[in-house]
Amino acid sequence: MSEVFEGYERQYCELSANLSRKCTASCALHGEQKKQKVAEIKSGIDEAESLIRKMDLEARSLQPNIKAVLLAKLREYKSDLNNLKSEVKRIVSGNLNAAARDELLESGMADALTASADQRTRLMMSTERLGKSGDRIKESRRTILETEELGVSILQDLHSQRQSLLHAHNTLHGVDDNIGKSKRILTAMSRRMAKNKWIIGIIIAVLVIAVILILYFKLSK
Image 1 (cartoon, rainbow, N blue to C red):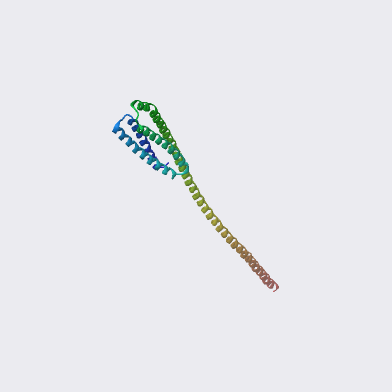
Image 2: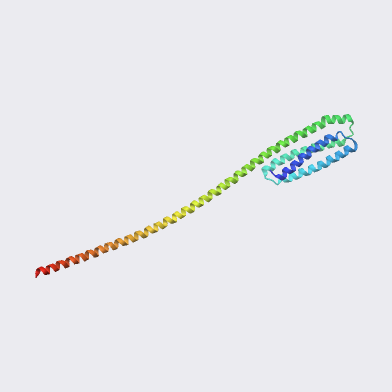
């Protein structure tokens, strides 16, 4: 969740609780003190409206899934602020006697404050749920990053293995070339050996014939 939104939200919750206390306290005041307290409440309401507008702008700039949750919270905040405005109107509209004010304080005002307290409780629960959702989103994002890093590592390993295979292929190709050269050399050597055998055979045959001729001539004498 946006840290900016959370900052505005904390300010609003503190301001709303403070305004509720001032509304309750103003019911027991009279004259100038009451007017001064009402003026403080109205100023606080203006500030609360400004915070809600800022939260609305921030929420609409976020991702759709987060924006939907934050806008739902904003609707509850706006309802809470409208209740505070209604309380101020009832305080200002006045001209009520002491008994009427007591009755208003004991009935309508108490109900309104109770409703506001219930709404704030729901808002706090929604904030907690949103925080948990934010934690899950962060965890999912961390998992995605870890998966991405693992994928990059696997691709690097595959690239390294591919280079090794290419090197092995080149080595085998070189071995094949060497084997071919060796085979050609052996073939040439075999041919030379065969040729030498024929030459030696011819030489031996010539020598044998020469010995026979020599013996023949010696014996014929």
